[in-house]
Image 1 (cartoon, rainbow, N blue to C red):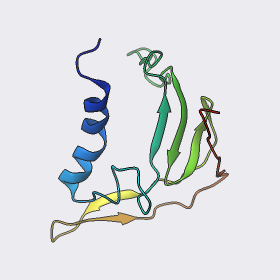
Image 2 (image 1 turned 180 degrees about the vertical axis):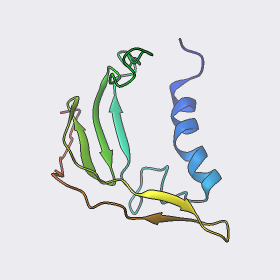
Image 3 (image 1 turned 60 degrees about the horizontal axis):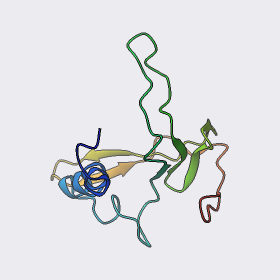
Length: 115
């Protein structure tokens, strides 16, 4: 729909919420020392396919999803890796992480030049 430039959309979904939660630059930024939460997608092909009748249909155009460095989606297929952590606001207003599960079936995958 080209409502906003892709750079602004990515910022709106990544660094802005991380700054608002006070977890930037540990999250919401691609940098050494930051958590590797990444989505590799084709902006020409990305499309929400979920409907009210089928709410769990995966979006089209997403190749890889990494959560804390664990490959959760590999070429459109779920891997079973669960590298996520719950972020909880503490009583002092800060945000901390809570480990709920250990990653399972996780695979580190080197993605070079889109391959």
